[in-house]
Amino acid sequence: MASANIYGFKVRDISNHDISMESFRGKTLLIVNVASKCGFTPQYKGLEELYKKNVSRGLEILAFPCNQFGGQEPGSEDEIKSFCELNYGVTFPVFAKIDVNGANAAPLYSFLKSSAPGLLGSEAVKWNFTKFLVDKNGQVVKRYAPTDSPEAIGKDLESYL
Image: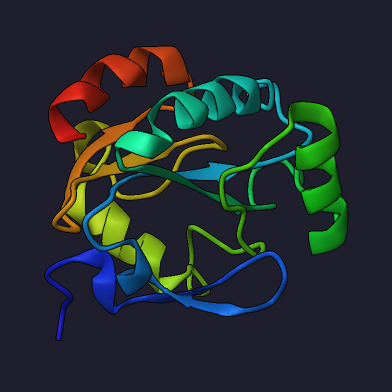
């Protein structure tokens, strides 16, 4: 049975703990597949600024490292966590490395992609830093391209916070 919202999924955090998406019920979510060695990696800075500005208003940013695009996330979970903290001061949740496309795609990502197809109806995630906006009811409301900056997304957030 297909899920009607994101709350039925479980994910694994970067410290290897299972987290129910139910724990984010009532929050506005920006879910991002990230990589440490990508041209878009500096978006971590903008994402952290967006998070700090809006976390008290109900925003959570969930980062899912992925090594499927040009091998740009080769590190272990510990290396990824350290990179995010040391280089960008990331305080939003970072999860265990996943696949976002293909037969081994994380179930959460399969749901996100089918709920908000990309350009020309394509479901595949095209590159690192593709972003999905999820409203407080767990519904996917928008997909953003890797080139969409966190600052630009901030304008859209107002109506969902």
